[in-house]
Image (cartoon, rainbow, N blue to C red):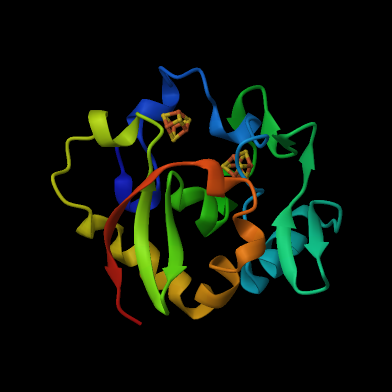
Length: 158
Ligand code: SF4
Ligand code: SF4
């Protein structure tokens, strides 16, 4: 079901690129977990073994051989609790010249196949990220993504 506000895209079910994003972290950095998501997942999973900490202050979902540890039988096993970063992808937020922008990575999927003609429907998702925007736009999140081309959708006003 296409539910773009919640990060659900029909195209992902039958990804024509064969590039299931949850198992292709050789080209993309691991998803960010904000502190609220971290606490919630800890409670739900009764475990601490699902994330890695970068330099003591950046929380990322743990990967195994470039695959998300939550990917089970081709599906997200924490779908209802998946992080905002997962919901937003292949859109992302970047910081450039002290401004924030919503971007779309040029993977050749969403842009061509979605029926929406503007992306204002992502505003709610972006609003939820705003309190953590410094973490999300930290340079350490883009070491791999820097290789991807992207299209700027619009500036994000704080
Ligand atoms: S976001 Fe695009 S490339 Fe990634 S799984 Fe979905 S359709 Fe495939
Ligand atoms: S948490 Fe779920 S949606 Fe996010 S990368 Fe892992 S399997 Fe994919």
